[in-house]
Length: 115
Image 1 (cartoon, rainbow, N blue to C red):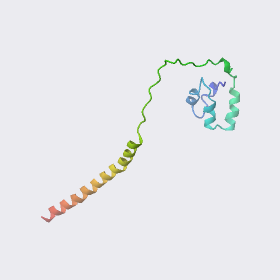
Image 2 (spheres, helix red, strand yellow):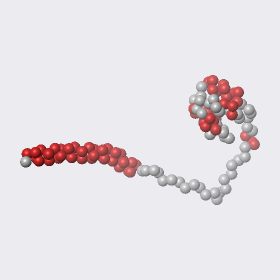
Image 3 (cartoon, helix red, strand yellow):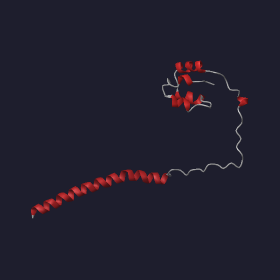
Image 4 (cartoon, rainbow, N blue to C red):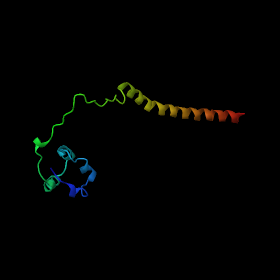
């Protein structure tokens, strides 16, 4: 167990990073970041003791506890393929329409000036 309260203001990642790792085993959180050797050494100064694992109550979930609803996937492969096609097709259609308007606009002006 570590008490890093005195280090909250000095932590390079901000105090929120430390606060979100409270009241749990934050070993993985600490190791995944890839702290420097000096940070690992600094942790020794904040060490206050070890948790007796037998004192941790077992979490018991009753069998009749409703489970949270599962969400459907945000999109399936067929619709994502369609979206990818639209991402290219829509700009091309807009560009084509702009060229068509420019071409027919010039053609109309030249026809009017001939009269």
